Structure formats: C-alpha cells, structure tokens
Image (tube, rainbow, N blue to C red; front, side, top):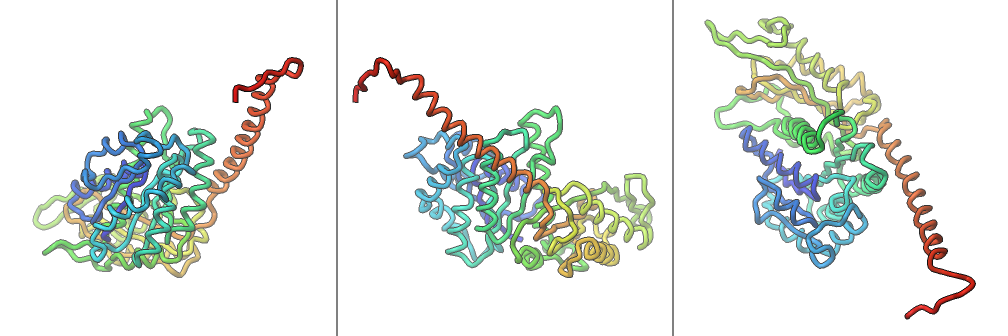
Length: 391
C-alpha cells in the first residue's frame, strides 16, 4: 500500500520520521510522500529523515515558531488560517501514485490534536482517495489538560477521517522507563505493526508471490466502514538452515515445521496471540465489524490452511462475516508474524474512561477560572477606600 503520510505536530512528525527509517531499513516503499507540519520550529529541525523541503512551519505570525503550548483550539485555528501553506506542500504529492492519505498526530498536545482534524476535513473535500488518521492517545499519567485535549480531538478526528487507527500510549508505557526511551520504543511498536500491514502485497521483481494476496484494496475495504480501528501483532523468531534441502525450525523451542500440520498450527496460534494480546487500542474483539489478518515471514513457514483456520477463528470471535486474510512472503525475514486489524470496534473501555476524565477536567478548569476571577477581585478591590483605575 502506497501512502502519502502527513505527520502533524511533535508526535506525528517523530512517527513519520520512524516510518521513513523503516522503509529505508526494510527496503519497503510504503511512504510514497511525506510532509511534516508543526508550529514549533525546534521539533521540525529535530527530524532526521523527512526531507527539508517537506517540513512546513505554520503559525509564525501567532506563535513565532514556539508551538501552541498544548492549546488545541489555537492549533485548530492556526491550521485553518495557514491551510494554503499546508495544502501547497501536499499539492506536490503525486496523488495518482498513492492509495490513501494517512494523517499522524498525538491527540493530547496542541498542534496535532487541533490541526489534524482540520487537515482531514480539507483533504476529504478535495481528493477522492481515502483519508485515514493515526491518533496517539496520551498516557493517563500525563495530566488533565492532555486528557481533555485527547477526548475533544478524538471525537472530532474520528468524524473527519474515513477511519481512525488508534494507538494508546497508556497500554504501552512501562514503569521506570525514561520519557524519551519509552516513546522511542512505542514508536517502534507502531511502525512495526503498521509496516507489516501496509507492506503486505508488495512484490519485488522475481520475488515470492503470496498464495493468498493481501493488497491495498483488502485494507481499504476493511477500513471502508469508518469508525475506530485497532491492530494486534504477534511474532516468533525462526532460523533457516540448508542441509540437503531446506531444514527450517522455530528457535522458540517448538517442533520443527517439517510437515504442513505443524506450520498450520503455528500460524493459527500466532493469529490468536495477535488478536488476544496487546492491541494498539485495548478493546473487546467481540462485535468488531470487520477484520483483516496478514501472516508474514519466510514462505516455508506460511500456508493457506493456517491462514484459513485463523480467519475462521476470527469470524467466530468477532461475529463478523467480513474477515479477510492472506500471506505476505518475506524470504529474508528472520521471523514469522501475524498482524490482525480489527475495524469498527465498539467495546473500548479506555475511550469511555478518557471521555469521563475529560468531562471532569473540563468542569474543574471552569471552576478554577471562575474562582480565580473572584480571588483577583477580592485582592485588588477595597470597599472602604476605593481607588480609581489609571484607564
């Protein structure tokens, strides 16, 4: 799948940068075009892989390149005001060569949280290609203002895109991690999952052809119903040794897949682990409207029967009749992986919790503001000896 990726804000720019690095490292070509948009000059300068002429600084007349300070209303206003600058960079994208747009943004900050939904609205108005969002939810320990931003941005963003793919930092941060180290690992997790998913169906000249091809149309059809999407991933390391032919074995201590039954069982097991393990957005998979599974790895470890069994199991678990599946042969890979995409999920406790906390935070902020005005009045006014103001 060929994507035009727009990283909006600090988190969006860093993840975009990581996607480009993934392309370079793996030899895939998922990122057909890249644009990074920000109100903070320092964040744009810190990117390593996004081309200089694809970095767009907006809001210079308002914030002088210093960012919006987690004010996503201001972020939205600036995105609207400087829309022509952003669209000018996007106009250079060869749209006939892409399958979709992907806008990446952290939903807890100011620039991406406010600007990403604005950009999505305009892209959908102008282009016929699907416009997807990749929204990153803040951790619950990041504070009330970030939770409030995320809840407001989420409910706006999900309405403006054709589908919102969500990654919840709260489910992935580990205790004792440094902030930078933690986010680097999280960004790697994001790129690994989406890299395998979007890379499926890519065939190099003379390369292996999948038994059951998953191409961009399968992904687009799975995302077509809109709503919220979560991604599951599971992998096992493999080693390939040649001795009078191909002798392959899983290094995890399991049996050597010398027959189809062992390979089938491994694939089915990985599909279950992917769906029931850590999803990018934890949720109940029962009730997901659509699903797609991709099994990737060396061709000797992939077979149609395992994928069909995994697909049937997903149908039973989700209750959906729209479950697609296929394989993605990667001869040079040292592992077998299964990616499960669940679209149109409804039972998401984290979103309900986020909205509840955000409502409380909003009420608290309004109370504090009102109380602050009263306190100021009491401080500067003296009923007995009233002073005249200078102007």
